[in-house]
Image (cartoon, rainbow, N blue to C red):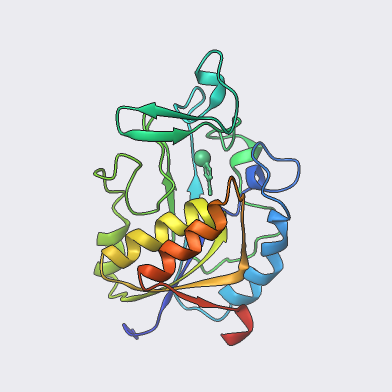
Length: 206
Ligand code: VGL
Ligand code: ZN
C-alpha cells in the first residue's frame, strides 16, 4: 500500500443534482466525463451519496408556507431549504448512470437523519455529529485528499473545510465540480477554502 498516495473523494454525483433532477445544479452532468477520467488515476476512491428520508428537515416541503432556497433557523443553526431531492431508494438518489468508477472502495451516505442535514462528508450540519469518514480514511493511511463533484459551494466546500480541520491535505479540482451559486455562495466558498489552505487545481494537472 502506498499510504502517501492521495485518495479521491467524489461528492454527490447523483441524478438529483443533474438536469431533470430534484435539485439540478447547472451543467451538473458536465462533471461526469471529467471525473471518470480523473478517477482512473487514483487507486483509492470514495464516493458520497446524498441520502435523505422523505420529509427531510432540509426540504422546503416539510415547512408549510416556506419556499425552496429560503433560509430558516433550526436548533443547530441556519438551514437553506431545498426542493425535495435524493430521497432514499429513488432514481433521484442514484449515481448518474454514466459515472464509471468500478474500483471505488466505499460509498458514504449522508443526510440520512430526518432532522439534520449534512453537506459535509465528515460532519453533519449540527457540526458535532461525525459521519465516520475521518476514521475510515485514517485507518486506510490516507493523508491527502482530492475532491470533486457537486455542488462546489455546498457539499464540496463543506467537505473540503472539514477535511482540512481534520488535518488532511486537500485539493479541489475546479473543472470536476459545478456550483449552485446562491447569493454569491460560490465566491464565498472559494474564499473560505483558500483561507483554510485548500489547493485549487484543474483535472489536466493529474
Ligand atoms: C447538496 C444541497 C443540498 C450538495 C446536497 O450535494 O451540494 N446541496 N443537498
Ligand atoms: Zn441534500
